[in-house]
Length: 319
Image (cartoon, rainbow, N blue to C red; front, side):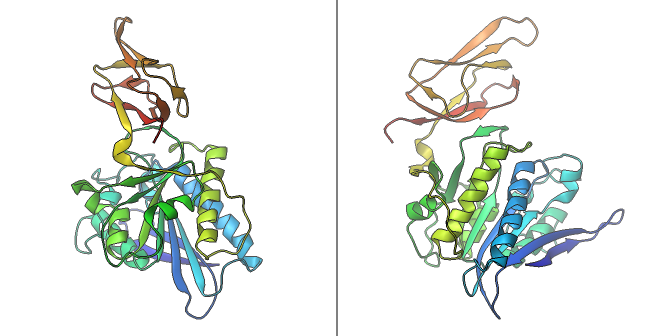
């Protein structure tokens, strides 16, 4: 294992912020096979913890000679220590999002310079895996996601086959929207890297089972693509879906949410998903009903909810 600083930015009032990477593999000039990155935001505790587990696992596997010849894997657990130290999701000073600044600009604002320095260090990998979080706070069923970008530089397996390599129950294909063009995942692919986003159940807290599921999914991916010589159970059969096929359920009014279902539950059309209580008077002002038969894929986990907030995502049966 080689521990190195991928990028460093100085601060006038505290220590420099060093983005540290751990590289596994040997050989004089090994292929840059896979880069795995964790927290780009200050609340992505679970994502950092998963990468820490992978560093520990890959250290042990490397000593056993399990990294394939002339292959290498780099793990970067965290790229935003400043925000993580104070529990703030976005950048501490100006509320900008590092994951909306790629490929970066070396003479720009702080988060643009961080994105630039980080991306220059990781853009040339064959595969990229980002442990990421959703913009809404809630719980997901574990899944992998890839953006469908038509680019002649991106070759290899089909998108669905790559998603199945993780052995997770679901794999999503997303058609990029304009705001996706400044994300790490999108820019990785533009530069010829086959990039994936991995979503786990939690973000701000660590779920031991969920974290182990994600770590095992990454190891399975490395095995399936000839980077790691190791035996691991194959995981789940992966249902590959287009993200647009998932049904969104939103609130019609603001209030206190009283949920009746949880992520992973199977629901029928007409089932009660939650009730919205008036925050001052206590009466029920809305009842949210499932519009379809399906599986709860995402569940919003804050007690206070605003009007028109997506509080559930449901995967229809039969897809």
